[in-house]
Amino acid sequence: MKKFFFLILIWLLFPSVAVAEEIYLSLKKNKVNVRYGPSFESPVKYIYKKIDLPIKQIDKKENWRRIIDSKNNSGWIHWSQLKKINSIIPLKDKILFKNPSKFSKPIAKIREGRLLIVQKCDGEWCKVKTQKIKGWIKIDKVWGFIN
Image (cartoon, rainbow, N blue to C red; front, side):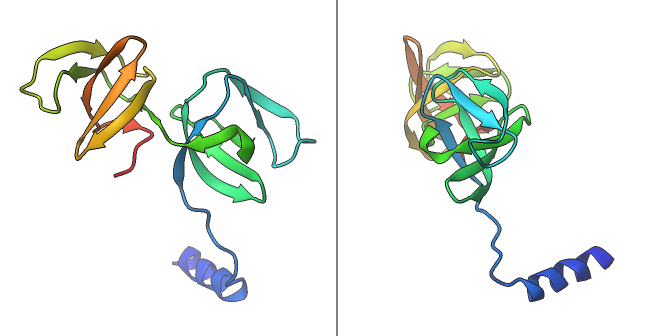
C-alpha cells in the first residue's frame, strides 16, 4: 500500500514524466554496440552480431533506447542502429506449415531461438522465412511480436 501512495505522490509531483512505450524493434546492422548508459562516452557492455535480431524497447532518452532481448540482456542502443520490427524468435520448437493452418502440410521443424524474418501476417499466423525455407508459423510463444 505504501508503494501505491509513493507512486501517486511521484505522479503528482512530476506529471510530465512519461513512461516509455514498450515496443519491439530489430537491429539494423550486423554489429551493434550495447552500452551501459545512454551516451557514446558510456562503455560498451556487449556487442550484438546478428542483423534483424528482435529486441524490446523499455525506455528512451533523447536518441537512445534502453532495450532488453529474449534472454533478458539489457542496455542502451543509439536509435540509428534500430528499425521497425521485422523478425521473431520462437520461444519453443515450432512447425513451419505450407499454409496458415495447423491442418496444412508441415514443411520444417523450427528450433527454439531461431531467427525468422516476417514477410506478412494474417491473424494468428505469419509468413516467415529463414535461410532458404519459407512458410507459415503460428505466432503464439514467440519473442518480437505484439498483436
